[in-house]
Length: 182
Image (cartoon, rainbow, N blue to C red; front, side, top):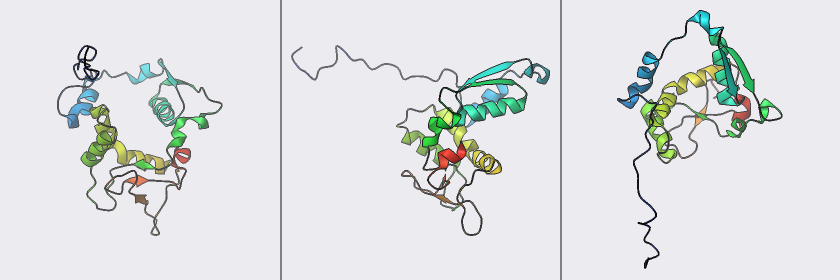
């Protein structure tokens, strides 16, 4: 090879990676379609099934709690000294939700776009859209469970613009949001 910049012999651009488990159709409807097409488990059979969850961070902990509430037997494993050592504790800046408290034009679509763009377009878009859809419910659930989010003088939840967002959508608990969520 005469030119050091000629990677043609070594590199070939392939097909984009497809999310094989996501249903086809518009992104806004994929999770609704998936939930409708999923097989249901008879409530009497839920007690007979055991679900094993690896990890006790925010994702594993909430999955275990949700499945336990639904009636499944749940076994959870933690590899750290304590569940409090999960990496979720690193989320100190806050948690985003498209509540549009400040009337600055925030929406599910804007949160979806900002999240996909912030991840350099590497995320599974149908999953990010679902997360944006339920983001407001996640904040409400956290408040109901006692997470001490910052509040404005009048008592409403405070939020701020954080991480380069153009709108105020980050709900926070001082500088220890991840620890408080855990």
